[in-house]
Image (cartoon, rainbow, N blue to C red; front, side, top):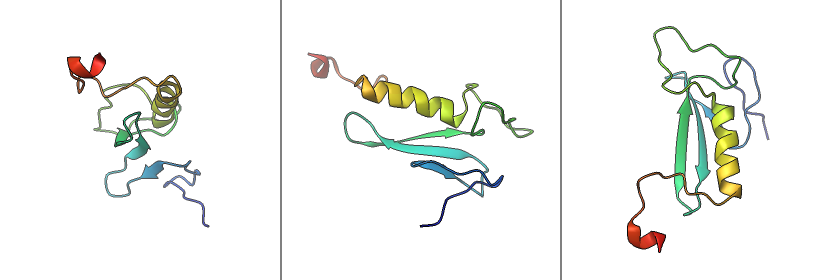
Length: 90
């Protein structure tokens, strides 16, 4: 199977994708509720620069976000935020 590369020739890990049309990276994963979630970033690593004219709301690169997600999944933390009801907490 061929390796997936971004526009700079870097190997993409499992779940990572590069969108040629927008120039953004995305990471797809299944959360603790077994639903597909997607996270986007303009940069792959912390050394990359954000493209001119683009704002990255959080300073995290895709791989930094990935590390936080993996940590939450191991600890079984639901990162869906406010999508939880009080009844489901009990």
